[in-house]
Length: 111
Length: 114
Image 1 (cartoon, helix red, strand yellow):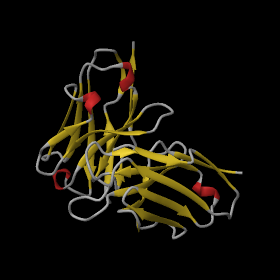
Image 2 (cartoon, rainbow over the protein chains, first blue to last red):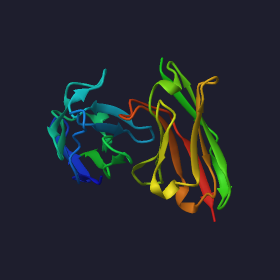
Image 3 (cartoon, rainbow over the protein chains, first blue to last red):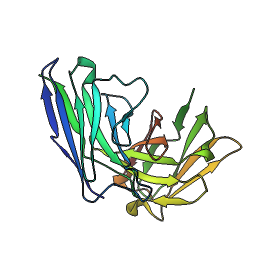
Image 4 (cartoon, rainbow over the protein chains, first blue to last red):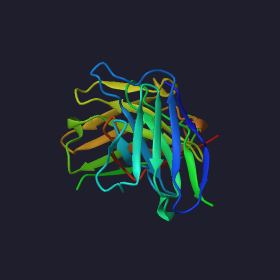
C-alpha cells in the first residue's frame, strides 16, 4: 500500500490551524472492520511518537488541538491552533497489511 | 514504565554483519507485535521486519534473506540480525512495539561504508 501525504512542507503562523492529508493506494479497512491508520510526530533530533491511532483516537497526553479523521483511503490530521512545540515532521502509517507503510512525511515549520 | 532501548549499531563495511538488540521493560516482548523501523539519513520511515506474538515473522522485500528478527523471552529482548550489509542499509534503526507503533526506542545508528 502506497501512502501519499500532502503538503510535504507546511509553514504555519503561530495560533493558526494546520491540516495534513494522507491518501492510501487501497482501502485501509481490515477484515475485522477496523481501519488501521495512525499519525506520528517526529520532533527534530527525536524518535517518532504516536499522536493518533485507528484514524481518530488520540493518545494519552496528546493535546486536544490534534485530531484525526477520515475513512477508506482518505485521511486528515488537523491541528486547531499551532504552537511552537508542534514543529517537526508528521507521518501517517497504515498497519492494515504488511508491509506497513508510512507517508513521506510533512515538515511543519513556524512562519 | 514501558521502555525500549536499542543497542548494537556501528560502522561496518559493505558485506559485513551486525546484530541489533532491543531491551524491553514494562511489558513482555512476546505479548505484542514487535517491529524494526528504519530511517535513512534525511529520509522517511520504513518498516523492515515484524515479529508477531505467535512467533511468525515478515520482512520488507528488500531485506528478505538478509535480515532475521528474533526474540529472547527469558531476557525480554528483541533482536535483528543483519547480514550482507549494503550501503543503502545505512539508517537509524528503531525498535517499536505494536502494529500501531505505540512505543518507540531512541534508535541505534547503522552506517555501512563501501
